[in-house]
Image 1 (cartoon, helix red, strand yellow):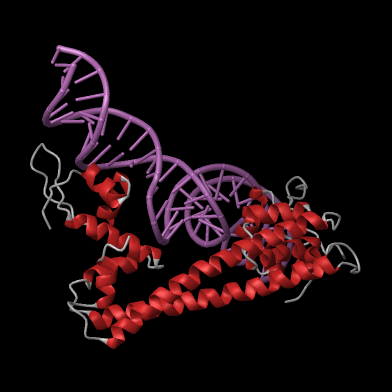
Image 2: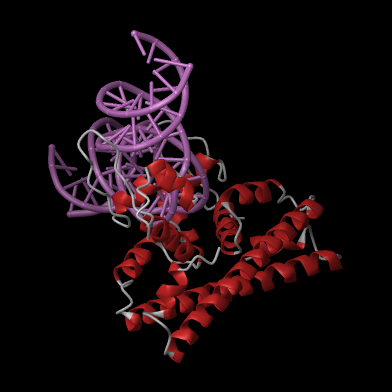
Length: 135
Length: 135
DNA sequence: CTTGACACGGTACCCGGGTACAGACTCTAC
DNA sequence: GTAGAGTCTGTACCCGGGTACCGTGTCAAG
């Protein structure tokens, strides 16, 4: 933690993010806005790079920015139980989404297979299946 | 095809959709707008119910409204090859999404497991993992 | 002393898939 | 004749996660 005192542009480049994204995160309250030295540019410590990367990694694991705000609030390491609960909830959501997609995958596979088989009543079996009153 | 001559409200109820959604689909060109009988309300044939349900079923299989517009354009049953190609493309997209989610699932599972194991250096292993420079 | 590169703050716009609201009209029943 | 339900058009708003544009300020180099 060398407190490298970055400008927002350098901070953005270090974190691999746009300047606008940082301002956007500030508006959401994910990222603190350091005090502005009256007439000059705000200065950011290199801890902010870590914090932004934290956001990006959590996002890559499927957490929404709202959820990440909560995670950041728990990030002093003293709220491990809550953090774990949130992660388990997210895991459940991911698994539900996988189940949904697998069901879709099976339907699509069946449609493609039927199409390849050929020789059905009227036109295209895929179109027929979508037009049928199967609900 | 009894041409039941539905009002937009009845059409919406039959198709299980809001009136605004029908108008929205009309704006997108997914659904035709029957001529307005000068001063009266537009009348919809019951074929429109089928068409709207087609849209909803395709949507449930992961097709976007743009893609559904294409599907509807192919839906005379004479474009089975194109339809199949579109479906295969969608299947591939779904499979890619499943793969992404399974990767996420594995990471989340590992984090939860490590958290349950307990006894790590500093605070919460999940927070630590998100804060670490692993990229 | 001017030019260029940044920073600042505010606002508007993008995507996709709708939802909601406002104001005018028509039709039907009481 | 008047209330209520429905329809019409147009426009604005919602979500989430940003992106873009505008006018102004500040700083350093040439």
